[in-house]
Length: 349
Ligand SMILES: C[C@H](O)CC(=O)C(=O)O
Ligand SMILES: [Mn+2]
Image 1 (spheres, helix red, strand yellow):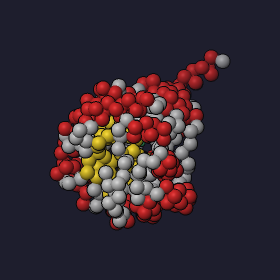
Image 2 (image 1 turned 90 degrees about the vertical axis):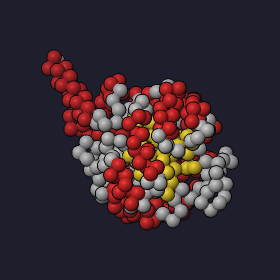
Image 3 (image 1 turned 90 degrees about the horizontal axis):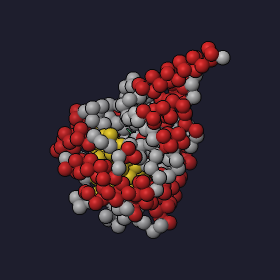
Image 4 (image 1 turned 45 degrees about the horizontal axis):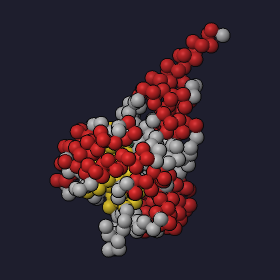
């Protein structure tokens, strides 16, 4: 692998501050936030920068949360700022459309990451076909990967690759995978599709394994790994890009990324604009423990506040019911159930 300047690279670090971080920011990124962050990531040597609503193209809705600034404005701004990096967008089939994808490409996006639940890769095939026709780099996201065993996950990766996907990711949406659980899934995907496609890893810090899992993912054959500056992302956040860069550097694994420039960006650009620093608190730890989609965190906190029930109890039930992305409305349902149960139990006292 070589970087934009021709130097060799063992691993590509991909940054999703401006997409997964949108969840933590309740989708309130400004155009200036995006321009400043992209400039810094580009200077640091990050070659793929994801910019979209947290739930991908078309995500700005009542169900998922409205964006402050239209993502098309943000994508265009990002493309204008990037000198060497490619701008990627996220697309969840059924939410984002092929029309959205064409518009993103026209605005300067050069890559698309198409995300499905880990058992539903077949809903992505049309989108991969269209993306390749548009000349976009293609990446597949198998979300909530902890819900599938390695062999079954590898078969889903095969569906994406056969449809035109160039790199398939094990996406630990719940931050639930612990060490070998991540490494074994990567190894299974590499065995299945490694001759024609790359394999990637996207971690969340709910149980604090994002960085350790990323190292194991690299050792198992992953060649694209995601991070976010200051871990800005859903739940307890993503693997911090600056820590990944420093760690891989210490291990002698070449990323072509300057960890000092990233750390500078964390202190001087991202920390000043973020509204909350992702943290491993009771709710996000429960997300990792119970296998809950990380982007449910803010939805659960809001429902907890509104119906006066604990957010972590809502999240335990979401995990027990195995709800997946798109079922955000069930969080309200659970909060109402919990509130009714509490009401019932007090009337007995
Ligand atoms: C739409 C999700 O936020 C995609 C993702 O980053 C994940 O599943 O994790
Ligand atoms: Mn994520």
